[in-house]
Amino acid sequence: MSFHASTFDRYLAGDSAVHHLDPRVKVVVAVVFIVCITLLPDGAWWLYALSFALVMGATLAAEISPWLIIRRSLVGLPFLLAAVTVLFTIPGNSLWTGPFGLTITDAGAMRFGSIVLRSLISLQTAVLLTATTSFPDILHALRHLKVPDILVSVIAFMYRYLFVLTDEVSRLLRGRAARSAALPGTKSGGNLGWRASVAGNMAGQLMIRSLDRSDRVYQAMLARGYRGQMLTLKPHEMRPLDWTVLVTGCLIAVILPVIGRL
Amino acid sequence: MTIFPAGILMHIPDGFLNLFVSLACWAITLVVLGMAIANTRRDFDERLVPLAGIMAAFIFAAQMINFPVAGGTSGHFIGAALAFIVLGPWLGLLVMTAVIAVQALLFQDGGIVVMGANILVMGIIPGFVAYYIYRLGRGRSWSFQLVLAGVAAWLSVVTAATVVSLLLAFSGTSSLSVVLPAMVGVHAVIGIGEALITVAALAFIHQVRPSLLSDGQEAGKGGWVVVGLAIALVIVLFAPFASGHPDGLEWVAETTGFLGTAQDAPYSILPDYTIPGLGETGLSTILAGVIGVLLVAGLVFLVARLLQRRSQDASTI
Image (cartoon, rainbow over all chains, first blue to last red; front, top):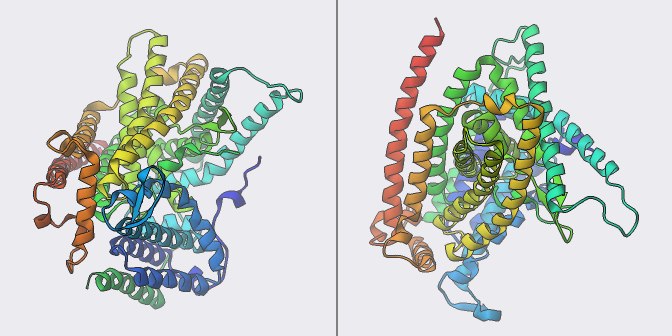
């Protein structure tokens, strides 16, 4: 098992107009769009289709394959289990009666379908944001948008050391695998408690190593003149195009739930 | 490969909570997070960023540690309890917030608008639960403290699952009578793995670096405010079930049935919660309670801001 930057970084380098938009614009439009999707009423199928078309339009403008965005958005599917219950519990006309007297109602199916679609479209929006904006740019945007500086710095630091520490943990995992050799057909290692304690020792060891590392990093930063603020050489400036996209993007997003409730 | 990744049912995606619930959770989260930032900034100063950043990366990496359980499934490590016990609640919360933000922004593991709820559910509530239960054993024998740490880790997972279920039911996304036992049941099992790993990790740290466990950051008085807030929130969410509406299913059917009819109302921003339709449903109780909690939270926020300003004044000398 090995973890490299490519495993984590979901940014797809590109030269499209969407890639060149100011990250602030992309973050704000994406958040406003997701809020508006949340506000869409149940069963507004054609509005869902319209929202989906908008996300896919932006995807094409970013010169990214829509299929890729759709595939990545499927990470949210396991959570749908939590919503399955509404199929049966909302009173309505019976659509299908299964075993144990479970009955799917039309109202339940509508609610379930609406939750699924709204969630998928929101996910696709977030996936597209991540795919067209590098993570440091997103963080820069958050800083400009007045997210507390300390929080953004901590997240930036975490991102930087994500790769180092996941490499470290994969070395620990490889070491455990190497120690756990077993003859074919036999089991290696002890009972559940023993296996958990091995995992716990790994976690404890990783924690101490991480704490020590943070201390060394801090000393190194002090030596280089760190005074509590992260500096950047990349000033983001809003161009006229950025303002246009910001305003039209938010307007289109806000119109969706307004139409839905008329 | 893992068949059932532990955290997956905890990271609520966008679209599963309605806007009202999302915003209410954001309000609570922002207050507590503000307190965490003020406290950690005071205690760690400029050392805070590398410390919290690297510990957040540690939590993320530690979540890759798994151990075979049975039948091809494996136990995973969530790490919130360990972080809060070793680092203290405020630093722990900052660390978990960074983890949740990166998971949402980078991997779409958990939504953006519901991130406030995710921080509440996976950071604030389990963290303070774990921290205060562990602290009950202060001054007792080490083995007693370890047992308490195990209980704390297990409870932190189960409490988080409970609150997720409540939020989902409150949003009309799932029926409480089904999702609560299911979530709590699954996480009661996941919690055992979490408890075992947390205890083993603490035992290891105690052996190798005992100083880490003795001089952990104190929560101070603010911690009890958070606990009070969290307890108030849970009581508020539970209130309708305790009074007159013992049947959770009936309650959800009522609210969701009401959801169906509310669509006709034009221009409503919170269609699920237009007050006139509430009548005597449990919803109005919750709504009133949440408004109360938010009012209190707002007050706490103001006080925290004042305190923060004062501590900043003191530190600029």
